[in-house]
Length: 111
Image 1 (cartoon, helix red, strand yellow):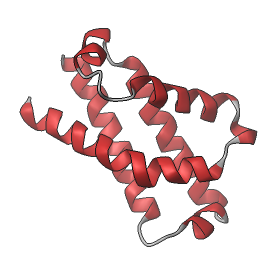
Image 2: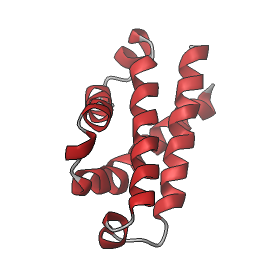
Image 3: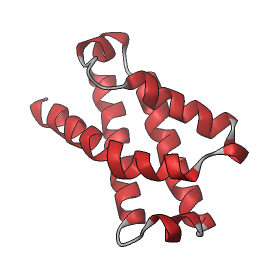
């Protein structure tokens, strides 16, 4: 479980960075700012890579989390970087990351 906790901390750190980057912004501002896009996409890649490195037993234990989708997002960001849909990135950050953050915080708090 120890390596899993390390990867969960990486996920939490990346989510918190994304939250800081996006505080006080909206989609139009985000999509017009290349530096912000690059920073957010990089942190999403880190989240996906950390999720990819979680142990099979951890992923099975917490199967209610969409680990496959998180990993798939990372693959799209890495391999299709010129075709990334910024609306999907925005929606991921604003809709999917808050519950993932709550989950990660609860697991880390229980260990």
